[in-house]
Amino acid sequence: MRRLIVLLTGVAALLFVPSWSAQTTATASPLSSLQSASIPTVSGPPVKVPEPRFTRAMYATTQLAGASVMLDACHGPIAVDLVGNWPVLIVQHDYCGGSAWIPKLNYGDTVSLKGDGVVPGIYVVTELRYQLRGKAKVRDLPAGDAVLQTCISKTELVMVALDRVGAVGQAT
Image 1 (cartoon, rainbow, N blue to C red):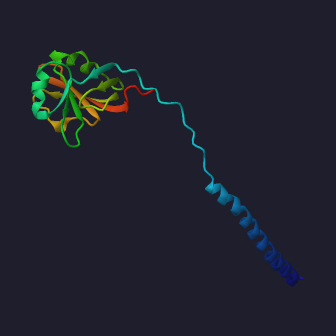
Image 2: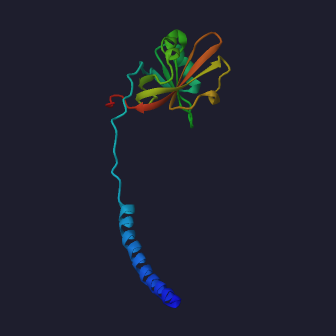
Image 3: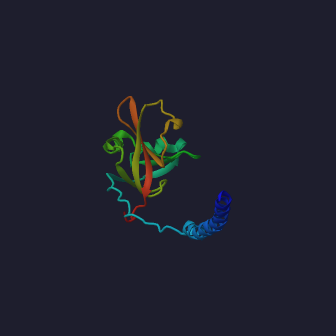
């Protein structure tokens, strides 16, 4: 009797294993098609860029060596091409209008820039950095697409890092 039970168990096992592997083979096929299925992409509403707090057009563009002459003319901000992997430096004397806007910027504010030496667009403030006048070097510039600079006192200047977020005239 025991032998009969063992024999029947063995036969049942032989019958069960092929039917079980057939089920796993059958379920493997839908998994394969599920794995190759693509998920549709869903896009949200366009990002709303805040209205620029200030809009400025560059008076001129120059290299660092010629910046002081153009800056002293007091005709507006100057875009200084520092050459290499540096952001464009936008400078304006405090007494020529720079103090009317650059030190008033805060993190997240936006500025619209256009004119020679800059990629026209809307830029967002990403960093504010203060340095001693006469001691700041190009290596002290914060990272960004552009950096604004003006003096804020007899001993200090401010550097405002900007990242470009949209083109001028682009729907936002």
